[in-house]
Amino acid sequence: MKKNIGSVLALYPMPLTVIGSEGEDGKINWMLAGHVGIIGHDKIMVSMHKAHFSNRGIRANKILSVNLVDENLLPAADYVGSVSALKVDKSSVFAWHRGNNGAPVIEKAPLSMVCRVVDNYETETFDNFICTIESTLVAEDALTPQGKIDYGRLKPVLFEMPTYSYLKTGEVIGKCLDFAKEYKNKEEK
Image (tube, rainbow, N blue to C red; front, side, top):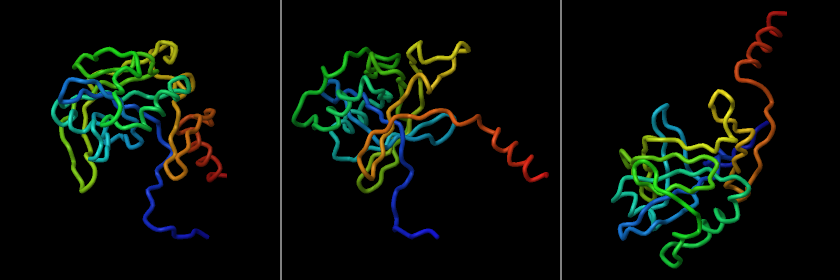
């Protein structure tokens, strides 16, 4: 039996990310974001409450970076998520460089996506930046010998909204489509 708990956003946990942007004044800013998602094979969406200082610069410059957080980066990432750029200069929290489109990228992030904003789907309280990924930068030790991302080695921190908790990624439980074969074989017997 299932219980109806109302209209609850229940697609957690998800990877914890730090968004890198440049303000209208040219100052670099970092913001923790818990709402980043895939909207196709060629686009992602970064959803940010309109009250955030970062939104103004992203709307003006149309560039940002999405930096995955691992355990080593977590203390600094948690810090930038706890203070407002309206009150604290967060530009020097991370060592960074500019990505190929000028967006600030965190040097020690295990994976960074350099993005260009192509649209903004606005709701009453959120900017939902639709972005194309112009480049993806990955720590070499988080790549397979074939050059693919190995999330088991990358170990991104996950964010779970209802309890505001950070989780570790777990072990691999199987390969996609292997369970379907197992199910099909079981059904055929």
